[in-house]
Length: 318
Image (cartoon, rainbow, N blue to C red; front, side, top):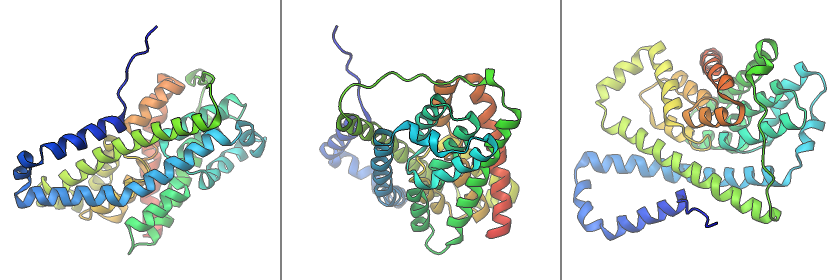
């Protein structure tokens, strides 16, 4: 049987770049206005700053997914579920990767007998508090070192709180343990296939997020943003909701948040806490991996807990 040809993000990106070069004479005039040039400047600045962290994150997450034995995680966690939850959350500090990679790892933990509450705490924590994300946050907010600490504290607290909440209120019939087909080929083949797929996904969402952030900064009237930013509660909810819609990779979201300088640090912290835990692509992945009954309960609860703890953390640290 002939295999179907499926386009990939990197190939489409290459075709788009070739087309842009070929048509640069025709489209160049479209970017002649000051506003268009400002949009391009903001867009390029976000992408150029964030891309090294996206690449580093995909290389490390692929290595973890392919090279680290799944049984390692099950043996490293305490037997008591209530203790396993915070340990799994803290483990996110040592395991770089975006939210796209955390879903299959969490599924692997469940298949190996790890309590679902601990696996879910890891799912939320790993893309939000790993070293690559924290380093990117420090670079994006050079004058605000406490943003790194606040992001770490609020994100870890959210992941542990959700793990304990699931341990207390979660039901087994809401969660479907994911099944994974065996992968053929050597570790090298699996590694480069994982890098290729993660890089294509992360780069695509980064480009979309950077374009949306540039539009917010350039096309939306500044007085509108200032009015929204001046309403504390509305600003926090609005940026948290924006994080859900933009679905930016966690290695790049700090640069988008930093560009939204009209908003308070509290609102931008909510953006950084909610984004890696609740967004459209992650919701779709959770539906596919754990079932719709799980996702429609877990995602809204995570949003509410994340916003609440982000505000509380900002009040204490920022």
